[in-house]
Length: 474
Image 1 (cartoon, rainbow, N blue to C red):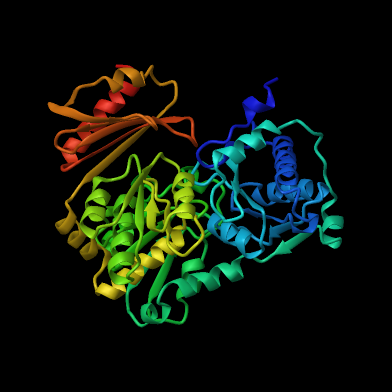
Image 2: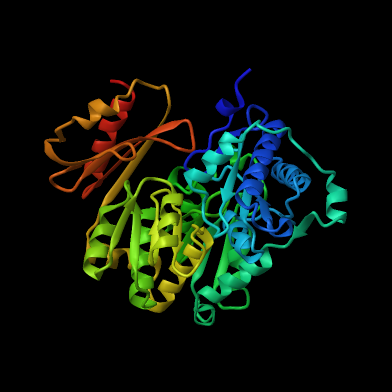
């Protein structure tokens, strides 16, 4: 039998496992006990009644039951629990932690992973992702103490577990963050694909009562996610892309399984990568909304963000992959916007958390301010800051014997000299013409990834093909 420390490891965004394999009720109870021990140890100076923890869950198989199980363990350890009354997006839980003045939050979700997975994310009292020092403490406490459990109905009756509506405050905030009155006066038509996730009908509710027309795709609950992944990448969006080609929409928006990530589709069916969305958010918040501060991208973020930051005179920060690193900066610095290549975007004067719905609302607001559809905004941005083509491939670990040290010693790619090497998260090689290739094991799935960017799609694909060949051990 595997040691519990081998079964449960927190990666860049929580712990994820296969349901009925290692993601079991037994293991979830063990994690809940470890979180309880961490909360009671780290917040022992806080009155017991103030050590509140917020718990949310998404639309995955058994997520409500796993959420209830966590609540029962925490309640038995003397920790008051606010348990969501329905499936909610991760950002709604994160916002809720702050609103109920909780010391932490727990979200049951596996985000964009396939339907056979589920997971646990830990949030700080500020709503951001738990940093490594917290997850290390929780891991160290796994299996240390016997699991305690409370009867659910009794705990609710005794108000040890409060079944709570997190959506009301979240929707109120959404409506206050953007110029809703101005947005509602326009006639834009928006298609939104929520990929059977917990994003649900939030955008529709926020925009209700205005002239904007919204149509939802895959808004029903389907824990199998059509047999694919609820990940906002073109591969899983062919139905929505086809509708954007055939029908007259001004903007297509896509959310991942727990609605903290975003992608977009332009009129005509062109997939818009999150990299470009981050650029648009920075331009909108800085130029149209007059926000000031720095901007954040990850090591595999587009060079376009560097160009935007330079021209606008904004300080640029670069982090490892994982939104929790961006979140940390949003707590300590004044940040206009920060984002990751996978679609997580965070913005100023909010919790230090990514939010796909809010990012989508801001794109819509930018269209209203500048009276352009999303394609026209992208074209204008690329004309001013350069056009870059991004490519990525994912391979299962164990496909080949890839050697990062060997890759790190590469001196040229496609005949171009390597002029910069970064190795603080995987290995990234940048060439003299600005093109780059990066190899990195995923922190959330049993995958290894190759990323590339260049000023032509042909070059970007050729670079990622080199990376794939190396990963396969050829």
